[in-house]
Amino acid sequence: MVLVLAGCVVSDGPLPVGTGPVGVPMPRAFDPPSDFGAPTVWMSRVEDAPVPMVHVLDGVAGWRADAEGLTRVDFLTHTVHPGVRPDNPLGGGLGDRRGGDLAVDVLGNPVVADTALGRIVLAAFPVEVPAAGTSPTGHGVELVAADSATATKRLSVTVPVPALTPGSGPGIGWSSVLGVHDSLVLVSATSTAGGFVAGIDLVSGIVVWTVPAMVGLMIVGDTVVVKHGSGPDTDVRGLSAVDGTQRWEGVESGAVNRIGDRQVLVGTPQRGSAVFDAVTGSEVVSSLSGRLAGWRCLDDGDSVTVCQVSQNAKPYAVLGFDRTGAELWRIVDEPGSTRVPPMVTAVWHGAVYGYTWGSDAGLVLDARTGADRTPAATAAPILVNEYFGIAPAPRPKSSGFSNDQRGFSETVAVPAIS
Image (tube, rainbow, N blue to C red):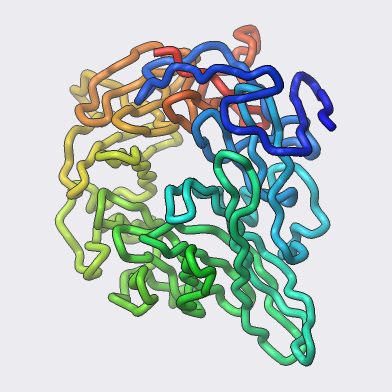
């Protein structure tokens, strides 16, 4: 059965990417896009919206993870596929919630990866593990993998969370897939027991290692960067992605960003920012080190990391770095500067997307040089690939809103046109 809701097809069966009831040709790819066309799909974070807001792009489709499972939205056919759900009942507050954009609160974004199982989409869900024999009901995190092309389940593996006392279990507050390293998927969760990080083999479906009392932040090379402890005793540590063994510890906790292939930036309002080698934990020299804190860094998935910091709620500096962490370029709001640092919204395959403060137009920079590529772009997307950008829904010019006042209750898919 196929239902048509507000211009969107809701399907009870999978459709291959780029095809529909009558067949839809693939659009031209631009890697990376320099500009975008008019919106073709409107999405909302409102509960039970006909077209839900996506959190990651995958070819001509987007994916989200929420109480409905892993859901794919096909932008060419306007098809919302049935959610790929965990085998166990949802927990962590998801079990009695439907729709909406709850994923930003308790679920990390889905991860799209090319693996030994093919191209798959991964998400980690908090679940309740039913009682079995003498084992009471418990809590866990279930890794769910969906086939990228067919939106069908490929894998489901549950990592139990040890109970604090017999007959009880810690509640899961947040769960996420950190990424994929070789054949291992790294997942993490927070819980009343302190959280954990685990490595799951995709081929065998076996939980290879689990480290308790840690919360995973990101993968940098073959190191899993984690936080340990709580309150003033929290520190940042590095674990081996292969077996979970600890590589280093003792870096004062703060906001953590990845720089290139093997560096992490850690910043606190009190101490400022410092950069560390992800393999050894040793501090390294970087132009990001110093009194400024609050950096936000985005990787382009190719060769560049772009970092931005704001002052007085406005962009102050934007810097580009290569894979080694060496600075490539900078735009800083300082006396004598001939350029205005943009608000960066996305970085992808050598392009920086964003807008200048107070503007109602987007812009595109060259990520390797910082030079203007498209001074007045149609959109300032928050997600980008070779076919589409995802941007906040446009507001009428009569509303008087500029880009820095835009809301995110609705987003649109805008096709790449150049």
